Image (cartoon, rainbow, N blue to C red):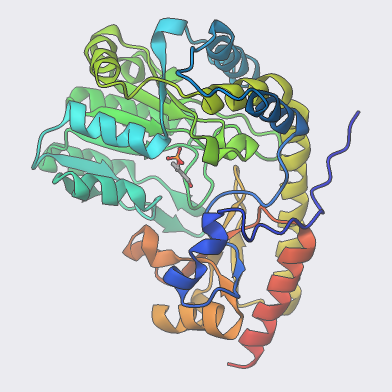
Length: 392
Ligand SMILES: Cc1ncc(COP(=O)(O)O)c(C=O)c1O
């Protein structure tokens, strides 16, 4: 079996990487260690590079056809990895998950409509809702001694009083890495169906399950869910190919799907592009072993980080994620204001992480750390952080 090397440090400067190029404009310092935007610093599985290279060698980049094998590779992957049975007609392409969310908002809701999210959550949800002149309704996650929970009682109350037209579910939930349980999601589906709420389930982190925990697609939990769900996913996080822009959308319910997919098609939003289909098909067909080794590497990194923090920076704690490579750092014991906390990470430790309040005001006292980097990079970053905390 081939062993992939996730310890290799690859210089991403001058490769057009947002993670590096946006350091100066966003953080005011191009020298910070970038541990923010959610891509990986690991080389992709070599079959992806080889397939793209082979196509690049041909000197004509005309309009691309989409092979049936591309669709089949997604269908096979979802069946094999998640026992999620999807037919060709239930599936189409979208150029990015956030764009998919935006298309659903534009198609299923009107200006001024309310859309429910559960903060702290992936910040573009709020930006896309507000950018399209819709109104955010929040059902904050509840933080208990055992970690974060979905507040189902409040969800019912908010849905019944605020009457949102749509809910955007993050499953698994970025930034905390929670895979929602089937019972919880069944209740969400019941509440939403009873109240005419369409659920857009963003499952982009669903392939990145850790510790052998299964991913449960929201649409699979009940007939209620089937009737109201638009599912979004992608190979982008899974195989580190977000630059290829190759996301997909699944709608099981025919009445929901037919007009929506027609609208996507006539506007050519669902027309795949050449490198997107090549990269996605190869990843879904040949990337499984790479993914398994990569998630094992992340699991080990979580242990190393947890151990380091306990020994050296006990004021900062992690929430152990069930999925993905993002750690939600609980920094509340440092007793700093959010500005002071950001200053500690950026100006004292020279690290670029996502500010917790980016995900909603519930993120006060928290920072999001992307651990999809070689362990040597993470350990160096933690040492810088330990020094910075000592200097407080
Ligand atoms: C929950 C979630 N949805 C969507 C995206 C971005 O997806 P895309 O690049 O396909 O728009 C991310 C990236 O971090 C994410 O965490």
